[in-house]
Length: 181
Image (cartoon, rainbow, N blue to C red):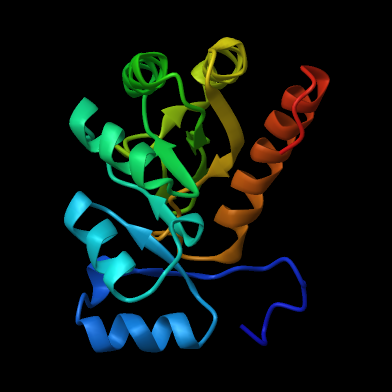
């Protein structure tokens, strides 16, 4: 955490790396937020005393029941990986008549040497992002909180730079629509 001299930096502990309850409590004590990839992990985060507002629900294939549970608990955001998943969230939000905060996971479709997101399953392809942003903004009960990028396979910082450059343009587009990321 000390390597990032930015007061709003909030690292997240990914539960899937080690879901031992005592380890989760240490992560909480050290000031981390919590990344859950299943309903069971959301429950573990709550058992480790993370506030729902500190939990992000990020997985590739969420059912409407998963989305309903996460929204009912009040997680910080549900990460969306496809236009179809965005429609599931809109459907659940409409049924609940409750705002659901989301993050859109971006596949920036970049290539840097061996690192490429062009065949990656994570995120909405960049060419569809404006459509996803517009849908999220127009949908009642959905609050677009930000963007997400899965870059764990990057071999150099340049991959992150290329992704951030594209994501910043999406943030500018979102701002032009009246939503601040």
